[in-house]
Length: 246
Image 1 (cartoon, helix red, strand yellow):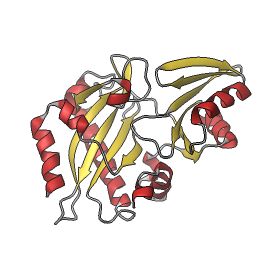
Image 2 (cartoon, rainbow, N blue to C red; image 1 turned 60 degrees about the vertical axis):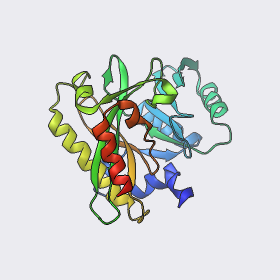
Image 3 (cartoon, rainbow, N blue to C red; image 1 turned 90 degrees about the vertical axis):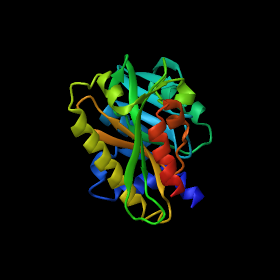
Image 4 (cartoon, rainbow, N blue to C red; image 1 turned 30 degrees about the vertical axis):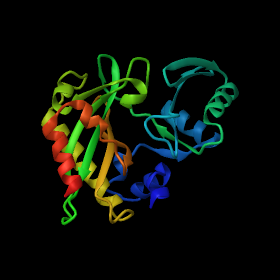
């Protein structure tokens, strides 16, 4: 299971084949020259990410500025490159020999002008087939970064509801948004259980756009618990651990 479990492309393709889940997955292709340019032309902003990557490592954001100019953001460095060939060559240098995929960028809302997304933990107990959302938190990207991984970008972790109240989408009804996030997260896990029937915990990276439309960025079978330890919400952390043990 290990190889498939960490392959983002296989999980994406499997989830995309579920008609009820497909609308919540941003358009994604295997990375090559034609797929990159076609997706960038269609959406104007894309994320180029490793098939095997984790914790935000190797993620590149590319935006079409028009007139043959492209903004490329990698780690905490952003630069504008002139020309398609120069741009693609620069991206190739970052990618090296690793397998990559290219994905429509979700325009995420912000907290203090920094983009954020969410980590949602979904679990079941050994003796049960019922999946439960056991934890949620908000991950805010660190200064100058596009990735929200706390370790990589030195970003901020916030409790879900208080974080929403500080965000650019605080005008959206929080209960309805939370209900939608829970629904899509459970849909994802119920689909993935066909691929990983014995698995009992998932960490889903979920994003919304400024209008509150929910998207699944990716599904992790081995989510780090450090996010929830750092959050200093003892009750929430204990709940997740209780399901892991149970």
